[in-house]
Length: 153
Image 1 (tube, helix red, strand yellow):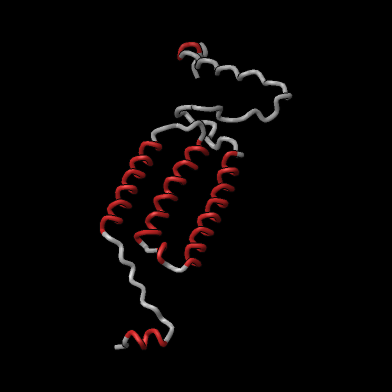
Image 2 (tube, rainbow, N blue to C red):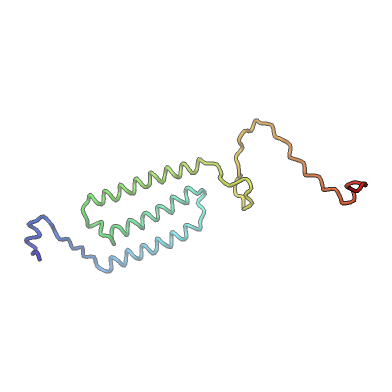
């Protein structure tokens, strides 16, 4: 077993992160309040699906950051680890932003035979200058059994 002086001689330092239970309780209460806000925000329409996703991801990022900072002791660790964590969040935000921009640029992907609730036009106008073809006529009714012909086969 190594002593404290041997540990210091090898360049290793022992870090003890002493946090009181009250600090953890405050973080727990903040996380619970943020969870209630998340559930409440999921039931509100903020005008577009992009705004809904951005708000939900912002709340989730705040909660994940609190967990990483306090419960995983990132705030007491080396500053480079915090820089790596923040840069990871920024890269994730950029990549998710590209996905949101791409998803907003797409046409509706529902099939033409979709019979569910319609909240927007199923297919965009492709060529407004093209002449509109008349609707197909309904198929004629089948002839009655006696009308088929007088002659028997």
